[in-house]
Length: 299
Image (cartoon, rainbow, N blue to C red; front, side, top):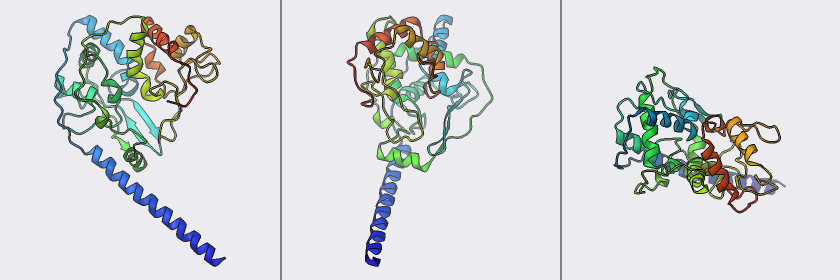
């Protein structure tokens, strides 16, 4: 019996040592990503100054999810507060915030490339999705943000736990995404908004596939305990939106209320997506209905 306990103890010790080694290697890998200095010099986009474009930029600021992280006033909002992962607030984007000295190129580099003016990667920023944003939309959003009145409020500093960085090093959680972005990508100047499914594909690429997956079938976000599990958006009758109507979909997107009466988790930014236009919602719905039904969890 003593021999069995001895070998069991040695085995557990070996496993523990192995986990420590893996954790240390993953941590170092994460720190290499976090501290990497990038030299990316993107072209600036045209920043409009007319009132109509700025107004549309304000709508897009909500419809494209920016308001969820940076607040209605642009001065920052709580993004994440999960003990195991950390506490994250969006930056103050008003002239009183960290962007006070931003050039037009700095805006493009930060939003599309996930890289700050000093060359370090941004942390917890949706640039992997926003790299697909057309020039026109990006220009209008920047124009709106530049028009915001200064708000003298600095959000609390970023707090990312060691667990998050280890998962980041293992490739299970995105803390930085600069190494996952095509920095040579060419962008269209404009994509004509319409109710056509092809426009819905563009919007989904920007705002939905990051959480619901490339196939839009949902499933657990890899390596992210404590976060809600994104549902299946494909037209599968049993696990997806197969039995939903467009009216029910539009209601959920604009009010957060599902057909069964449940309210969507606030991790899903339906409160900002409420500013999507009728054409955008129709286009998204058309594209989703054109997808093959998939069972939940395939991402």
